[in-house]
Image (cartoon, rainbow, N blue to C red; front, side):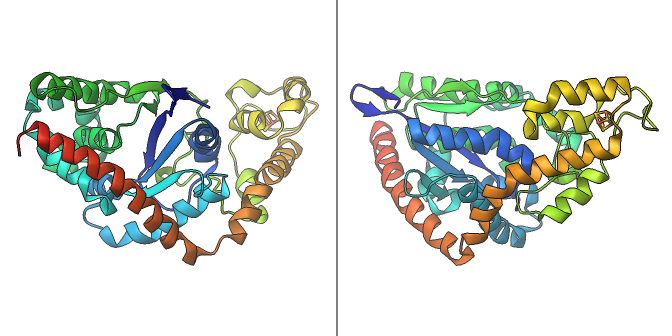
Length: 328
Ligand code: SF4
């Protein structure tokens, strides 16, 4: 267990509510979350305010998406009794801290965050709102309000965390030590390809969902693209460029050398290779899907309400200290 000075260290992470999660979420974030929750006092956020920064035209989608996502979290093994699952908008202290900290954050610091311009280029100019511009500061408030000791981050998010740490240092320098500078826990996991070979993503419509049934999974795997040069059984293939082979790493790791040999020599055809992958994925996902089927969707609201109440208690103490430091 991660302990310092007799205190269990706290970790904080979250996801925007986008609905049902897929295999990429499971082998990336969720497997790590389950491991973190054994070590740390873990806080997992349903980032519904963050969702509004880009989905402000469709707020009606956020509620149902929340429930599906939390069911997937629990099915993957995130235990609500051992962790704090909360909803960002049910912890108003996060928004209060956002206003307070926004007074000391130079606009130029936010302009420097590299993902801002990239995201506008990718998503369109309609996302360039005041809220979207302040997204990294809201992220910091999610972390700082719980005085999290660490945050799991991928390499592409290091600049966001560094921005947040700079804000904390500025606050503590101006008003005395009040907030905690969270340390990054680098979390790297291999990119999971979708059925079209691009990164698995809901927005590309190429995902194998946790909640898919076995027949749907098999159908999706059968439609996967493969090495375009391997047309007939007997043609030698290139497993290193084939997304089917990449997914075998997850589902059939012990069989990889044999599959690789069969593909390269041409002895293995793409159809049986895909069928073996479908069987492997269904075997791997079966326990998660079985747990999912047992979760009563009506219980999600109570889990979130209970977690949010605990989160509010901790957040309230931080905001009280921040206001005291600001002489408010
Ligand atoms: S045999 Fe398997 S790994 Fe090789 S190209 Fe076909 S699907 Fe991909």
